Image 1 (cartoon, one colour):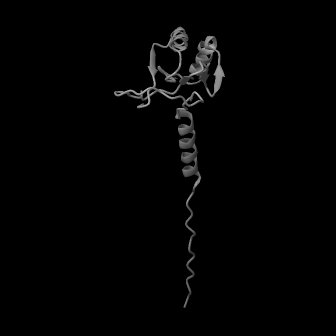
Image 2 (image 1 turned 60 degrees about the vertical axis):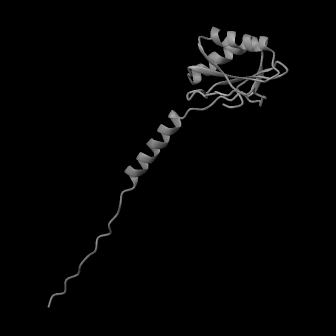
Image 3 (image 1 turned 90 degrees about the horizontal axis):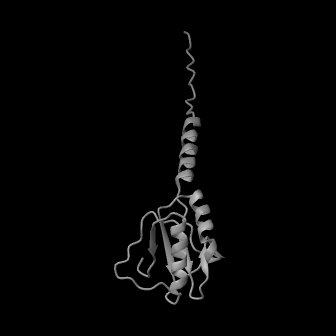
Length: 132
């Protein structure tokens, strides 16, 4: 009687294609992520009953009670808002800019910031309120 020996084959799963897909998805999500450019300071915003936060807002400029202008987590001069904004827009385009003005901020400083934003070519400016 002949004895038959059965050789079992080890079933292997090739993980390489799955890892490729995972890395491609990771790169896709990193590239398409929107990073919000916060102003870098907390201000006491005025109340607004019908405040709505724009969905695609990612650049914030804050004006403090003392008249300091904050952008990208640092204090800047009012005259340099346009240059800084153009730099940020080159990195990450946005069609609306949010101004976070303190309740006690002088309107003149806020208007100067708005003029600088308009000079940078952005027409949509939104003022943040405590409700947004």
